[in-house]
Length: 621
Image 1 (cartoon, rainbow, N blue to C red):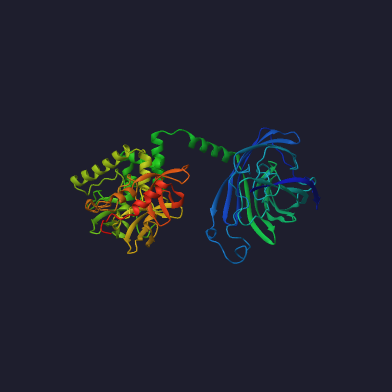
Image 2 (tube, rainbow, N blue to C red):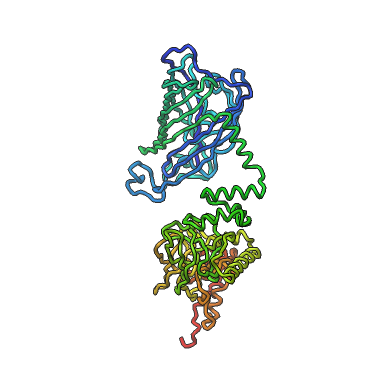
């Protein structure tokens, strides 16, 4: 059950403390437009949530009350806290702050009931003292912040300019959304209950702090309290609000408050910072011009120029920009890319990958990962030699010739625009032939060049799950050292290479993102799909069963895909047998998902098939 929490103003009273001849008033010119940049940051129990965006107002009528149209919205980004991945055991609700294991944001849900977190429009009728007399539409925000469209309208005093206080009542409403839950701890007691409405009192006070030209700054203090019978809320905050007397509108706000949610003697505190600033007309005109320019269709030359500028600035180009760079003439790019490949700088543009049959003559310019660097970074160097164990010795430009032994999966050839003048004409021709063969293979691939390249490159990047997996590893398949596989980790499959096969049948592997081996069962390994040529295996290695050791008919049957049927005959699946026990079988579907099914749940024909596989092929046993 999700919850939508809203604020509704009930009554307001103003308490003045000093006299002032010229009270503040909102004033807007006819057809005027004013824009604000807004940022809200909430420190919820398991993450930092940031809401940011631009909101735009246009004056439709200057009569009292004035009619103002609003458009805009905020985009939410979430950064998980490191501690959210683990659960504390210090008490019935987790840690010493009362946050139970697994408790997330009370404002997170699958569907978005907060219209302020997305582009929306409102019509607002507002008086010169900031009273909201009518509003069409909704721009509701989380954290009990009310409507985004009303954020910049503070209540002003009828008579004062330096010190006033606003008190009133509000209602807090909980709206239940189907299909969502907070898990073991529900701060809003929503399970099975109806929508709720709670009364609350609030007060906002303003104390003048200073003046500079047309800007008056005030200390703003806000209090809200709703004790509640089972669930209570309170907000306490203070900050600085600036009013522009020349324009007659809010200039900026820098405010911090704490939202406290209490239930059953447990409190959840959510610190929230709220900032906005008015964007000047000149700044807004420039922003809009930049946006229009960014959305304008670009010529090939403009795209190339922007991509080269990004590389020059040390930024990583997009896939499309990288393609434009590689297609460009050498004269346009040699100075930019050559500079990176002749120094120790990170190589932002890399060429084709290295597989087991890639020619690697000594002196070939490459981009290779380094042990001391993240897996996603590559540095320029040259091939020094190919070692007997299959590794490749790379000499980096870094530290004047620093060398490391690297797997082929960690090496990429430099882009084609980089001249390989240190190679002989024969060696250059051999490298070019390899590049043409790879490009031709991509062009002819069934899944398309981009999808195929994405699959291949995923078997070099250990930080993300691979894009596709192949067949399960047969029990009689040799697993030589450095063989590339996809290994299960959590809910995904990640690139790894084999270190050794253990006496107990377990396989020691090393994920690209790790520096140590991990032991896994063969059932947790998958072969790369056909698109991925084994990068680390030398041609004399064999990843298939030798012809002299042909599998038995029963073994061949178990290695083939077949239709499995359940005992009712209603459900069928095409899958391959992975393993079997006395009372169950493990099978794998073509999409890589593995299932364990009790024999009693299989059809009679399937049980007979498994029984046949249990029989020995040895007539003397």
